[in-house]
Image (cartoon, rainbow, N blue to C red; front, side, top):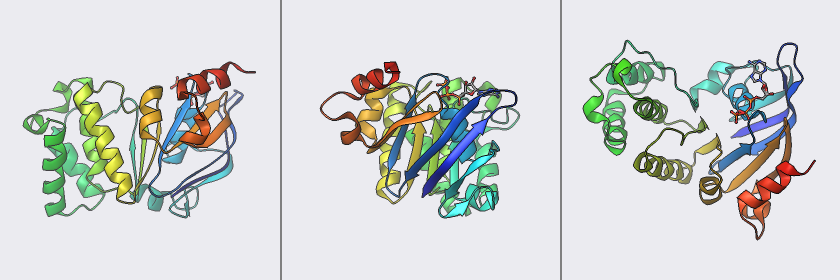
Length: 237
Ligand SMILES: Nc1ncnc2c1ncn2[C@@H]1O[C@H](COP(=O)(O)OP(=O)(O)OP(=O)(O)O)[C@@H](O)[C@H]1O
């Protein structure tokens, strides 16, 4: 579903933020991407979803290169950034309808899914309010719902649990598992290692722009906790 091949990215005047990264996310995977601050997670994620250009390597989504056909890639992908920047002058429902229009979601599907996820995240009653009046967590919930209503094949999330209350975080984990058991794929970054350990069937650890380990969660961590493995790999130079 997602293939990252020899991906390398430098920012202007800087060193390589990510260097020769190779990763494959298959259908049904919940793939956790972990690393210290500045390791290169957001850089990778923003390139995967077509927000950031990159000079070397390629990224394929559902067999299509993001460089060759970014629109086709974006049509099957949903991206939830760590700090969703939504349109403050719209109401929640106007924003969801805007996303529904962009992705040609039918009226019937739209109504069904907005009700399902709006109720699940307890935000239905606020959908008529302006987004400018939403708290950070409410904006996060709205961004999640907007990502889910067009039934993406690939869901990409950057630090999705930051700012969510415990109930919403639990709901998001349930929805992520449901999406993957229905044949979708998820690639997400997190600093919450116990969530990654429980939720992800695969894990990649990135350090200073380079992948240090990746694979099935039980193989990456062996008999240790993910936290122990992570700290040892990150401290080891
Ligand atoms: N716009 C930018 N211009 C220049 N350098 C950047 C830019 N964005 C990121 N970097 C650099 O690229 C490297 C990787 O940053 P990135 O944001 O991808 O890390 P991250 O793993 O997402 O970190 P965090 O966990 O803190 O969010 C860092 O050295 C950072 O300083």
